[in-house]
Image (cartoon, rainbow, N blue to C red; front, side, top):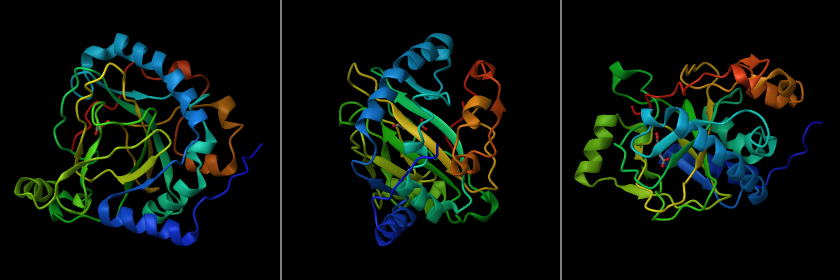
Length: 270
Ligand SMILES: O=C(O)CCC(=O)C(=O)O
């Protein structure tokens, strides 16, 4: 049955969030997602993380004691109230077009023993020859499954650097013209960010993992071979028309057993 959804924010507020993301490279919706849904994600994520570490933890796919784990597109993660959230989708449309696609459903998790990542972006420039950035083409919608504190490894980002070349952004960081800010999201908060904003993960100094979910939305013409969402046919048949449209370029599989043995998204820093 199609989900009945409503927007929490007015058109004008959506415009303001969109403008903030265009200017700063990100915007944050506070207290947005259901804590009940997030608790279900947290519980289902723990065994996935353990399994990932056991099978391919030695690949250290995001630096020491830090892991990128794709989420299976089934319950509780195939959750329309999250990936079809009306406010988030309105901002996504304002940034990467009405015809955007959803291409990624995953998590980044630092554990005790993790370190500062090198400052990076999550996508290469579209036109590296031109040393000029374009309007947004790839977004990450990030939301933590636990409260983020200074101790458990806040994501740090340098405001406004998405519209600079990486070299210029790093120069400005070096000179102090811009600085990295820790983003202290609480469970329920959502950050919508342009993946070109210079950022890094920081060490988790606690014994509790700090999973940060990431849903990728792209312009319809952008293909990112390193990420995709395998959609079981039985699930596909239950999706709303809007979800089918958002997910239209992802592979439909008979069973999630067909998914790759190891994460494909290993090279992440651009
Ligand atoms: O999870 C984080 O805090 C940042 C992770 C990150 O930027 C990455 O692995 O690309």
